[in-house]
Image (cartoon, rainbow, N blue to C red; front, side, top):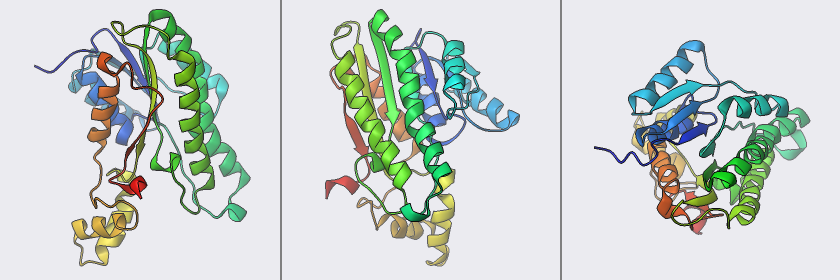
Length: 266
């Protein structure tokens, strides 16, 4: 029988209708949490995500909408979510272009969703966590919260901002709660290349240069950045997020944990 240590806890995972977010939601659900699913998708895709979280073992799974570019919509989302024990900020968007060619509207939208929304959800969730003596915030940042790449100015700026914001929050809430209760922690997970549908076109393009060999395509793609030459799987990010939610992780706070195959080791 799996460890149901999150029984009675409620989690909100933003951007959890697919990819990393869905994997995290399923993992938390598998440990017994009530999970609030959030993100984009058709009615059918949303229903499938909810069911996947239930099938993983969640005590319950329900979907709540919310435009993360709109602070008023975030307020409504958080009010509807109610008291949260676990908050995973995963939602994010991307647009690539040189700084001189980056549309200002894209800069504003990426900063709003990738950074400001993280501030707003934390601002609204953390006081209640502190009052109850337990809370976990796991912010899915990126390797680009630690290092930079060309043509990704708003994304890199936002993810660096998430790491900095998380450190400030960790300091502010570090003394809340105690060991037995689990305390309040705020940490970042910083993935490198993760095998999701979003990256599949890049893999296919590289594989085409190797006679259709998918593994060779992956090695070619990752060879530029990720020394392990292995993709991280979404469920592996989920497993790390789950461990950060354990009581035993009460003193792991304010960290930005790279899951990047050695990318940032150089």
